[in-house]
Structure formats: structure tokens, C-alpha cells
Length: 143
Image (cartoon, rainbow, N blue to C red; front, side, top):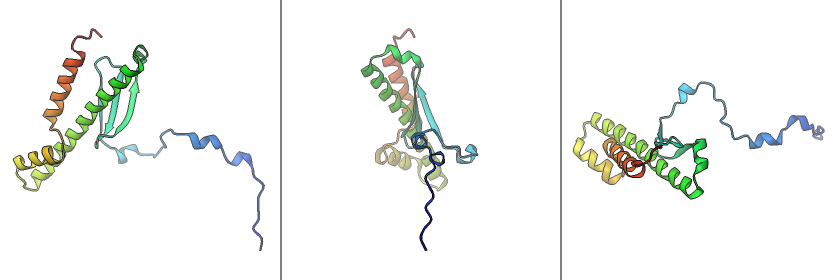
């Protein structure tokens, strides 16, 4: 028995749909809520959001970035992304420390393991790094 071939109907397929990179609607977003960490520079021109593992999820640029050169903008994105990654990794540190504590492990040994072996900053270290960068990089800005 021969297979039936239907004539091609161009209305059935939209080639541009393949280029639709918008976020698909998955219905209930609360069920799949993933922790995100966001840092914005003091001028409010660059905002970077990362996943908990430090990967960049989104970069938002305000209209103020049009006054920046490409190298300045690239540098600003890298700095703010680094701070957002530090925030995310410090959250990993906190969760792992709490989990290990719940299992009866020694805090000092766990902190050493998280810092030295996993290269995770403590929340205090992440806050200090952010404060230091903001003070040195943006301390004299009149924005």
C-alpha cells in the first residue's frame, strides 16, 4: 500500500517560529522557581542576574549605557557579572554549611572545605568584595 502524500500547505508551518527565542510559557512559574541573584551597578545602567551556580541568566542595560564606549560597557558587564556570581556562590556556601551542620558536621572543618576545596565565598566575603569594588570603582561618581 502506497503512503498518501498530502500537498504542502504553507499555512501549516511558520519558518519564523524557529527563531522565536522568547521564554516558553510553562504555566505555573511558582512550581519551578529557581533562586536568582541580581546585582546592579550604582548608576543603575547595568544589571546582571545569575543562577545559583553562578551562570549568567540575564543582562539588562539601561539607556544610560549609550554614553559608554564598547570597552567601558564590556568591562562594566564583566565586573557586575562577577559580583552577581559571587552572590550566587555565597548562597551555595550558606546552603551547604547549613546542610552539613544539620548532618552533624563540624562548622570549622566545613567552612574550610567550602572555601578551600570548593572555592565558595562566604556571604561575608561576597559582601566585602562588593563593598570594596563599589567603593574603589564608584566612590567618586556623582551619578
